[in-house]
Image (cartoon, rainbow over all chains, first blue to last red; front, side):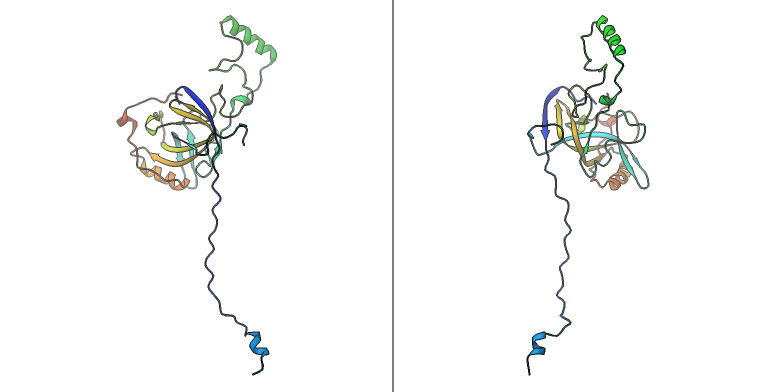
Amino acid sequence: MNIGEHVRTVYIEPIEEPPPTEVSAPVEPMPDPLPDPRRQLDPA
Amino acid sequence: MRGFERVPDAIEPLIGYRAWYFSVEHHAASLFPISNPDPSGWSAWNGANDRWVSAACTLDQRQVPLESVRRCLERIRSKLGYPPGACRSFPLFPLSPHTVPGERCSCGFYAMKALETVIEPQAGDVILGRVELAGKVIEYTDGYRAERARITQLTPVAGTEQQAMRLANRLGLPMTTPIAPWSVRGRHIWRD
């Protein structure tokens, strides 16, 4: 390949892109399957 | 820093354009340099579609000739009027190990500064493309020789779009609109 006459020499240090990060899916609130312990302790 | 110990001149890669021979099979696609393709099928451009790849110099790996042979060749060169030492264009003796691209060598990734100035390879399936260049880069009036490169875009020659699309899909690279063949733009012969 004919690229012509020498002009200059440079050093390029490109910024490396960070690796892609996984986007976590939003967590849906789940109903607590256990009864509230305070209600069990409180006398009626 | 990789071999070339100096403060970087820039952090933005230089942009260049070049051509490759290519092959597309069921599960693989490869790009091969136009000049001096490796007979084994290996290509220095393998992987450059998704990461930086580094060029290597094979000229400084040649076997050192015997001292007696070296002296004999020096005498012949001297009688022919050549100055002592290696000729710049045709190094008679192996080059010392050097950072790629070497100033007195022809190694490195080549690219032109403009897509339109990429000259026509003589045969085969050819595709053009845009590359980013980094590391040690020697700039010339019309192009570059670089230590590191990666491919960012492919440009098919008009009439080869179908194969080029398969290639681009395999390599995961974007493809631009086709460029007119050299026969339409003015024919040049690949000089290398």
